[in-house]
Amino acid sequence: MIQRTEYLEILKSLKDKNLIKMLVGVRRCGKSTIMQLFREYLKTEGISEKQTVFLNFEDFENRKFLNDIDSLYYHIVNQLDLSKPCYVFLDEVQNVKEFERVVDGLFVKPNIDVYVTGSNAYLLSSELGTLLTGRYISIPVYPLSFKEYVSAFEDKSRLDLLFTQYLQNGGMPGMLELPSNQTEKYLQNIYNDIAQKDIFIRHNWYKEGNFERVLKFMLDNIGSPLSSSKISNVLKSEGNTISYHTVDNYLNALTEAYLFYKVPRYDIKGKNLLRTQEKYYAVDLGFKEALLGKTKNTDFGHNLENIVFLELLRRHRRVYIGKADRTEVDFAVMTNEGDWEYYQVAWSTREQSTFEREMRPFEMIKDYNKRTLLTMDVEPESSYKGIQKVNVIDWLLKE
Image (cartoon, rainbow, N blue to C red):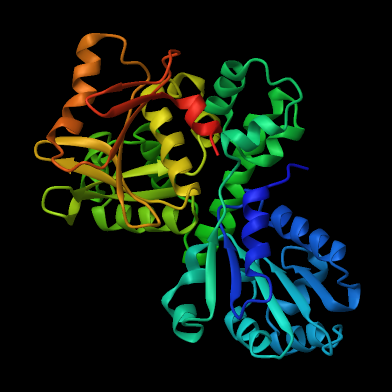
């Protein structure tokens, strides 16, 4: 089992704090494993079985609670020794009807610390937010970072080969246990599970061709400006009947299920968010190859952007597409301290014309915040007019 140390440290720091801890992210990205690691940590701290309850609401044996929150609440409370600090873990809690009322009831009970996981942004919907305002903290969970991926291999001498695998197959943890000829089928099954449980059932949709056409179009256009009307027009030109309203519903559902992240544009000079030309990045590049095929997974520049974007999210940054006059910087990033950083991502800038093109957006930015050019070029870290050029693999493996 990969020790997902960063998430474990977050949970340790929040232990016994008066907040509901919500681990949210796409299905099979490792939320349950993180919860399990934390439960094992509690055992080392002397927490007994009478002080913990764990329920997975995708287990068949727990189906009786999905529509009976009263029985669920008393089932949990009656197992605990409430004279001591107790810990309740509810896995895939969005499957329980009115789950937020159970969570709230447990939260207000003395000596109960509540931890939940969910695979749909419904967990953070306005209804839940209204009931639990100020009572919960959301902890986003992502597939394995490259650093975590590397930790699973004994032989780390060829980081370039491991990165090629990661770039193609992604970082869903379950893939590490499978032979290479089974990974594509595994990811297709995960997608089917997400589509059925987190999208079609939730929205009362039938599985229809246009939904998958939109999904595949997005995977094929990672890192490109997209809009509902643009996607609708392209699909119409190919003979499909679909309105931009329908496309908009599909985009919302795909982001709600954490399959994609929508990234707004930020005007660096005007210091305001823009409402057009947003970009979308996939939660895991493995889905691109599994659903489009190997021949469609060769857009190395945008794939590299996708990996950098996810890593910036893991490092708890707020990420935007940066507009700098008439140019665009790949990522304008606000740090936890409120400072701005700027990133350009390119596969290689060894050709002078490419280097100059990647530098141009940086030169349009008039402030003095940190600027980094990330590439696959293998050469010593260098600086040009205060702009650091760094190898992506080195950057991904840094603390």
